Amino acid sequence: KEPRPPSIAKVPNMPALRNRANIKPPARLKLSAYPTMKRTIVKKPKKKPASKGGKKPAPAKQTNKTKQPKAKKPTPKKKVAPKPANNKLSVKKSATKASKSSTSAKGKKSKSVGLAGKSAAGAVAGTVDSGVPPTHRSYALRLDARLALVDPSVNSDKYYVLQLLEGGGAHWVWTRWGRTGHSGQGKMEGPLSLPDATKLFNKTFKDKTKVPYEQAMSGKASPAAGHYAWLDTAGEAGQPRGRWEYYVDDHVDGKATGWYPYSAEGSTTTEELYRTYVLSGNTGMGVRFVHSGHFTYRVDLTDPGGNFTQQNVDVPPNKTRRIRRVID
Image 1 (cartoon, one colour):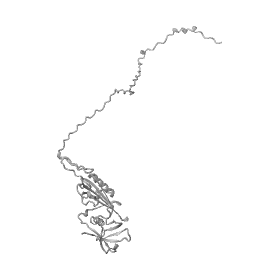
Image 2 (tube, rainbow, N blue to C red; image 1 turned 90 degrees about the horizontal axis):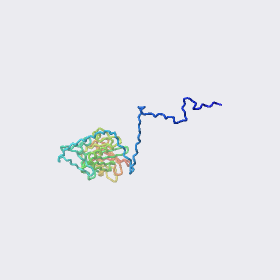
Image 3 (cartoon, rainbow, N blue to C red; image 1 turned 180 degrees about the horizontal axis):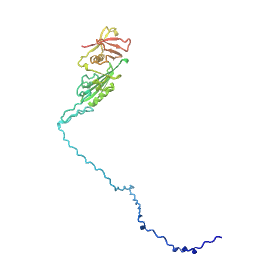
Image 4 (cartoon, helix red, strand yellow; image 1 turned 90 degrees about the vertical axis):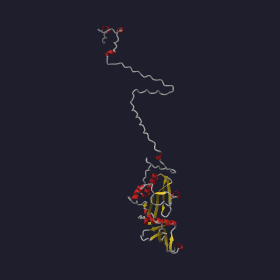
C-alpha cells in the first residue's frame, strides 16, 4: 500500500486553510500608480424623439464655416444718349418677310454688294423672262442667268432660266425650265429679303452647273461636262429681233414652192437660238434641237454665209429644209 500523504496540519509554514476568514483579499490598484493612463468615458448620444408629423429632424449645422468667394459688383451700364428724331430708320415691310437696311449716324445707307462684285441695287442688262406672271412682269431685273444643256447623241436640248427680281418692297427668284421649243414650267419664290434671294439664286445656279456663279461670270471656270452651261447674252443688247421662215419645195401638205412663216412660238424659239449663238458668240450652241408639235428638229446655224437648215430627226427620210431670218 502506498503511504498516505501527510495531513495539512503537519506541513510546516502552511497556514491553515480551514479558517477562510483569515484569507485577506488582494489590494486594489490605484490609478495614481500609472500616470500615463487616463480614464475616458464615452457617452452615447441620446436619440431625439420623432416629431408628430413624421418628418425627419433637420441635420445639425456644420460648425466649420467655409469661406465663399465675394460676389463681383455689377458694373454700371453706360448711359446712351437718345438719337435725334431725324436719324430714325425707315423700314419697308413686304407681305411675309422684310429686309432692314442699316444706316450710319449721318443717315447714309450702307450699300449691299451683290454677286460678281456688282451693287445689288443696280439693274443688270437683259429683259425679264416672258414666262414671268403679269403681276411681276414690271419688276426690275437684278440678276439674270440663261442655261442650256444640249446632248446631240440623243437629240436632247433643255433650257433653264434663272432670274432675281426686285419689286413690291421685296425680292423674288424666278425659274423656268423645259425642252427647247416648249414653254415648260415656271416657279416664283418670294417675297424674300435681298440676302435670302441672293443665297437662293446662288444655290440654284450651282446645283445646275456645278460651278459658283461668281466664277462663271468672271470667266474663271468652264462648264462642267454633263451639266448646264451658262449663256452670255451681252451681244443681244440693242439688236433688233427677227422672225423666221422655212422653204418648201416638195409640195408637202399641198403647199406651193416658196417660203412659209414659222408659228409664233417656233419663230421666237429659233430667234433666241440665233441671238445666243450668232450675236452673243456662245460656242457649242450652233446646233440645237427644237421640239415643235410632235416632232424634233435639228436646227443648224453654224454656216457663216447664213445658209441655215432644219432637219426632222423623228420621221424618215429626215427631210432637211432651208430656213432664214427676216427683219421687217
